[in-house]
Image (cartoon, rainbow, N blue to C red):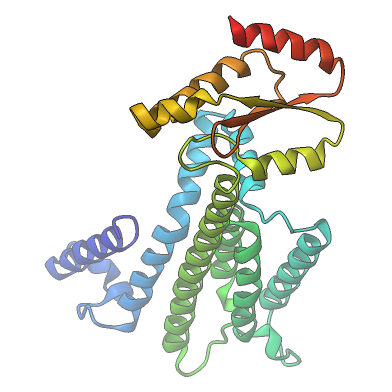
Length: 302
């Protein structure tokens, strides 16, 4: 709202007010004294499109110029937002489809031109961009769609013939720019957010919601990926009695502090896991596990 609607509306109102006062008399042919005309509509839709697509790209370029190291963070964000199931073949096919439609759209019209040299091809860009929005994320789509939009708007005369109703055709085409930009931006943001929610939900499925420690499901996954492992079982039967006398929070805090104490001696890929009741499990690498178990026992008894 503040990025798109407010600046465009404020600029158009101020411009129409300046035209009414005669400040821009030489530009009356551009807007006209009547604010409710086709040219004002085209200008307003162009302002909305620029606020929706041009402002984020301009901000990104300014940030890259001021902080060139941000390119590394940008690349990591691009990779993180792309769907994990996307392959190189899919990206190449999508890029070729987008490039082919753009080339057909920008071919100069002549007597032998087909329907693909008109703004009909512009409508075909919509499903292709939706495909990319659902698969490649918001960051990459904003970097691709904005230049595509700039090129197609700059060479609009290649696919909009000058004939009767030319102004109406321009208004319809500019509204297509606005609608396409909004749909592509919204769907890419929605798909990116949904993938982030799914990743967070899958990660939380391996974490106990009460103790905030890896659970039995996480242990099963680690054992499947590291079959050669040593599994240690820690049992603290006194926790049952202490929990009855002092509440369940004592058992939770004891397990958390004990896991934190044990993790100080473990390797980066080893971890303490929460089990039901008063049990805990520790997964160790198989290499020299006997000696490490003795060291771990001495560390716990300190």
